[in-house]
Length: 70
Image (tube, rainbow, N blue to C red; front, side):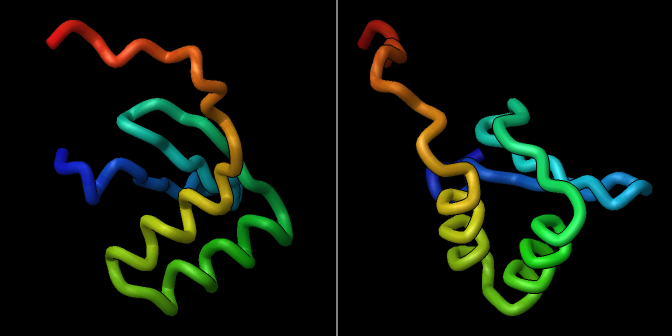
């Protein structure tokens, strides 16, 4: 996974959209929000899709994550 492809998403049979960041689910969308998200993703390219997912997830990181040892 490259830095450009940090976000991913999947659609369940019941219409629920799960948005993942580095493999972990950070947001789930249902109903009208899920439909709006799918419309926006379909209208963009890969880089635009990453931006859409970043905006939809909002502020889920709080700044206390460790970067790891160099």
